[in-house]
Image (cartoon, rainbow, N blue to C red):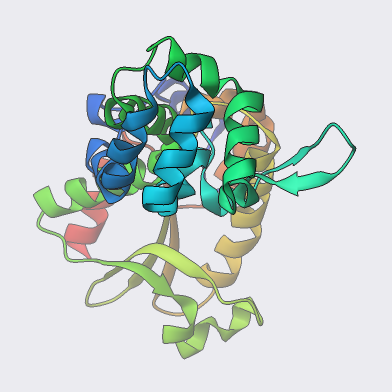
Length: 278
């Protein structure tokens, strides 16, 4: 028997929000500043190369003074050392970008082949610390996907805090012997709220764009919820939002009819009231 009606699903669908991003979502400037600060001394030493006409000689002088300054070459072309990017050389050799700071000849080859030589000579960069701050800002956009998930978690935490509801975050299923019904997989729930009569195991997410992952998430929760809900004193709760679900509304609808406790950012107060009255 369905836990919701078609009319309720249509209302739920109409409530989905276009975005949950706030202005501080786009750049984590604290992290950017920390990344830049950690290599700022080396970047300041590399500033010596800016404006040098005989760049190769300047590279040799700086190498002899402090070869370690060149260990940050990767970031100058917006690559992180830990990514261990590889390139193909004119002779067909595959080489890691990280190896170009191993000797002065490779440093010179790197600076010429990447085009940094002209940037240095023509003073198109005035200060490498400022330049890398910009590079880090650009690279930080790649972390937005992870921040999007955290943003939804933070929003739910804020709602629970304002309602005066106690909760725990990132709780593993292994804490509850009853959840052995879930099998061997170790499941981590975003939130757990425990009342006098029930333990609510909560998953939260937000999707502003579509993709195959949404179908998989809906299918997974549709299978997970009945297993948990058959246990005495346990209920599965899914709080999700975002117009990305429009592209996967068929799977969302299936889940909506299977999961009794499914909410979005508009109707989450219904869940808050259930907890308060439990």
